[in-house]
Amino acid sequence: MARVKLYKRMHEQITADDLCLAPLRGVTVRTFRNIHAKFFRAPDRAVSPFIATVSGIKIKPILLQDVNPALEQGVPLIPQVIGKDPVQLRTLLRAFKDLGYTCADLNAGCPWPFIIKKSRGAGLMRDERLFAAMLEAGCEEMPEGFSVKVRLGIDKPTLLAERMPLINSFPLREVAIHARTAKQMYEGTVLLDAFEQTYPLCKHPVVYNGDIRTAEDLQRLKARFPAITRWMIGRGLATNPFLIEDIRGTTQTPHALERLHGFLEAYLQACEVELHGPASVLGRMKELWSYLKDYFPEGEKLWNQIKICRTLDEYRRSVSLEKCQ
Image (tube, rainbow, N blue to C red; front, side):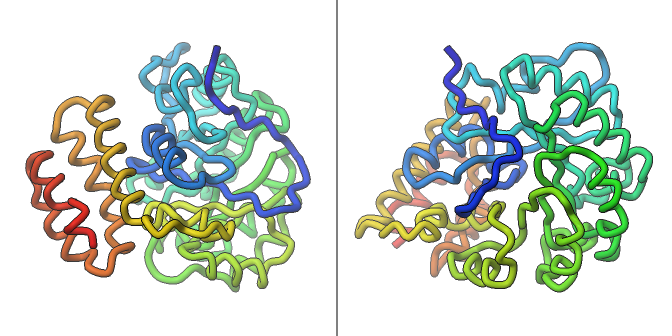
């Protein structure tokens, strides 16, 4: 029997805060989600790192491994897709449905220039006809279960407002808005004034995304946007694995550092089983530490040591409990 916790809620009215793990490519993968949920309080749900559409009528199982219900999925999951071909989108969504999923998300917000140049990610919003075709295909394949993740714009924070009539014309489950432009990437401050002007134009439930790094950050956002009850957290949780507990008001144990160290070792061991060779494992751990370093007072010093590690033994010595004090 499948062990996955499928996310099946549709247009439900969420009154309490709904905390969703954002897709961070190379970080919030299945192994991370599972190990994190065993050591810390997990988010209410997660959106998987995007899976790219491919040509052909069949999807190779390896492309679906991160969202495969036959493998452990510790958090209710929504698979995310990136692409620009409606036919290919339908093929991938049908593969999701064959796995038992009733919800999926379209990535129309990835800010990387090489993605945008190919009219994928945030580049989809630039082409209104193509964007419409992708939304149409998604909503037809997954009625009431299709959602989209966007940014305020590409170069200017006005494009999303221009596209909102189009977005509103489709029966989407929700719209996640990262309160930056693609040009900003993940730098600079979130554009809260532009977000405040834009999100009320959306007739669908809105998920706020962008710079929720502390419980206090979320409290400030809730005070400013009281109508929003859905919140997406990515880099904040990668930086502070205790963040959901902080937000929910769970008291951290006196042995929090030991718990964090146990999580890191368990994640490392799981990556050793999942990945091929120490170089791949080190790459995965370094990707996480590029965020996690900011949790520690001496994080930059730790990070400088981790970056030059060439073996797993060197890595383990660099992140020993004594070094992380």
